Length: 438
Image (cartoon, rainbow, N blue to C red; front, side, top):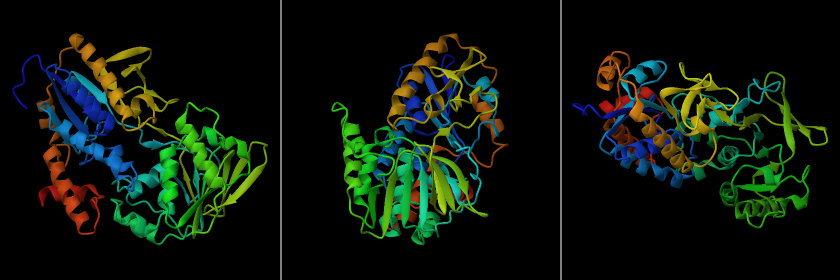
């Protein structure tokens, strides 16, 4: 990809999750003379799809075939193993590219900000998800599942994911792409009761009916609803024109009447807000406030909080601490009331962690349109991408290409086939790089 025409627009996309790929697709399909270099700090792409989607939801991961088609488009280059902010600064990127698009997602879990949150046994759901999905930065975490009761705080889809993984047996997970270290720990789990607790009522729960439907298929876990702090009429449909809400309430109503006979049970609780985690040296119980103001203590040995996520700040990029995103106006990064020329954002780091994987497509298209609308007024570059990458080779252990990722991908699938799994992921960066050279 050398000898580019003088009028060619060189764009850097930082992040290889759904929003990064969809923005790239919109840029490359625009008809403008555009090339895109996609930077990723890990040697592997896909972001949220690889490290966020639950292992027992393989259909959601099929979207990666679309990402591979985008990566095969003329003008695309993948630059893996490079961390923006450490290996390269934003200013260096802006000098080498006509535009820089941040697609860095929402990696940080929001804290509960209540006493006792740092007790051993208290974790975020985001860390647990990254752990069982084999993210290199989280693979060495330890989760103690030797206790009978776990509490999941939050009523979003991630909360349901982690509750479902805790509720399943090792045999139910063995044929998925769950990381081996996680499967080994889950196989020894003594957890028999999982509470999924939220402060709102059934109609306010943010999880989808589809996620809730998965609880009908658990082999050794019954699902039920604790009717304290909630009345039976709260499960009655109130908006016939909202089939999603109608199905969700119908499922919860059925769970509220279900018999409990299996070895494990998952209990949905409503109208409870956590106020403190307690224990002598480690987590033993969580205190929740009811709507009446009364306090209810629920004993547990494991807590997984799922109360939101935020984008990791990047040096040189204005940050909206309240929203937890890169400060922006409709995808254009802005600071001190003015837009920063040539710097853009898309996906969760633009709008916050909401919507489905597909939501990022429209978001990416909108950001791409902003980039292309501004390109005619771009300032001259003082550097080139190829010169920048030449200097970068002395800063990082290895720059990973998309064909290199293909080699890692094939090796993971071979490892998985031997175990009857779709893949067995490498969970350390050295192992990923070793697969490239094998």
